[in-house]
Image (cartoon, rainbow, N blue to C red; front, top):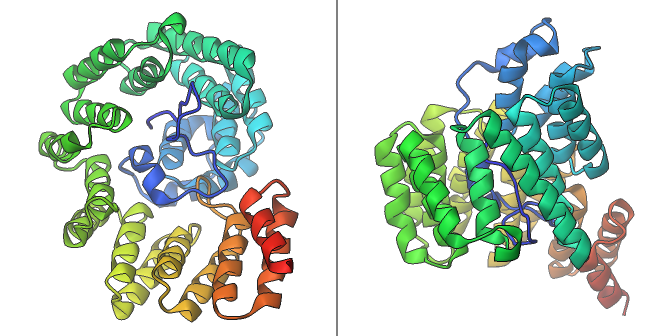
Length: 379
């Protein structure tokens, strides 16, 4: 999984109150084994690689069910628990567990990479001196990871992101970042093109993206990552090439029908094209294949609200989303209640909207959007 590193507070880390699918196309990787493994009674340590891949695919709840049934507390379990807690926005727990995993086994590159990732989550809200201190720790963990596994493309991707964002006095530099991207390409051509695309996005060279994504797919026609990058690219506001977005999302589904990303893209496209029968069918299929993750409902509701179309349908989708705890790395319930409140307001249901905003703030007292809208509605 590409690490979620953000050494200097830039926008691609998933740390905001509301996270849309478009924020993390590069977190998606191909699930190459059957989901039934999580029902296995074997110990966690014997299937860590499989569980780690499940986390990379966004199946946090499945992994949580396995680990909760285990009494293992070895380094591998600590590492998995750190990733779980990070996915569910429990930062302090994720950091403690990542540090414990590294202490228990300092010779595993993945543990150092996870610690670097969790440390980077703190930087957005840090003051200048703490930001520099955290960045130094992130850099150190990445260096250690690469010493242990010099050809690990995930570790290289993390270092590339560091170099791209860090100032020169902290060892950063765009030239260094591009050199690491080239190294990734020598190891895995498809991932190399995706790394170059990441840098192109950061450097506002958006005219390069389409070719880089297409080259990534050409280098590996079965790359779920490349397919989803293309789907998200074509569905973006800058492109609005919805047929192409749906095409690549469908190809990604052909690789793995349990991954939620393709359903999000196709559902948003169906909503934008106001194809209600297709939208309902997609959401039904998504829930059937992956009942743990209702993000397609959330994103479809958000799209309908933005279009100011089918507001009763949007309300239904948001109510569906808040019917269970969110999957890891998906919008929190506070964001869903806020979105629902805005839909209710548009329907003229002010009192109901206020109740949803109050619930949003109960769940997340520092949610500024909900604070602002509640103050506005109460007048």
